Length: 365
Image 1 (cartoon, rainbow, N blue to C red):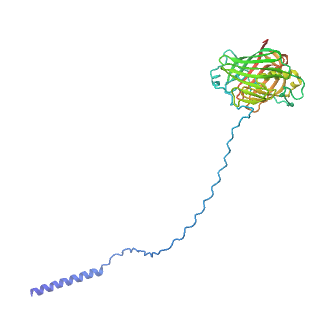
Image 2 (image 1 turned 90 degrees about the horizontal axis):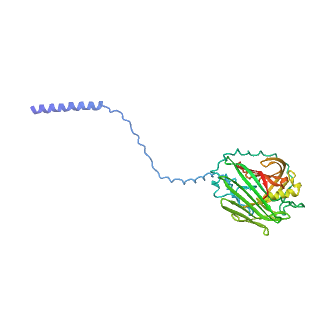
């Protein structure tokens, strides 16, 4: 009995548990969870289309044309190329186109100071109004213009002294100069020296023959700082040979002059024919230095009275016509009372430096 009762109670307990669990199971509903949708891809093999041809690149703009480099100017056979003159080399010589370069020129004026007892140098002359030009007369082949009969009349031998005033590197200076002119009727010799304390000196010499057409130079030389440079005339060959220049020679005409004989020959031409002294008349000669041969043209500007250290003097003024704005300016005064010898010479460089030579005395050589 006891076993039967235990069995029944056990079965009853189990039945009750089953009923409870079933009710709980039926009443419980789980929370709705989000459903992750999974995409199903249908993979297929598709042949890729051929790549499109790349577009041609846009044309690059053409570069701007480059300016052609300027070719260096080559000096003509008759004229040696010269670098610009060094500043301060004021001993250029009368009527020299420009001071010739020199390795020691830098030391010439660097230590120079104005003369302590001298006043300020004269200011540059204002430019004169242009005058109508007469037909140019080429005093080349025979020293006379074509068809002119009068032959040059040379001045008597003389020694001329000059006072020199000027400016270089904005410093005023005063110096002395002397022109010695000698001849015996068949040969001539001319020497010009310019010098000053602390500045040294520079000497130019010209020698040659005297012909019916005037001076015929044979040698022109220049002495400065212990060196000598020369230009030797070969009239038969129509050339001049330089001792220290490249090219070493230049072609010249029979009436060529050097830079010292030039203003003596100009005076001789004017003394022979007063018509050459008419204002506006132009005279052209070949001027030879120790480095080059060039054609120089002078224009007659007319007479004027100068107040010189030697006294009041009537002189005929001639001006060299520069080739360009960088060329040296030169003005020359020739006195008829002194056989047209120069009584004043003024040289002005492109940078404003100038030298003014004025006659202070005249004596026998």
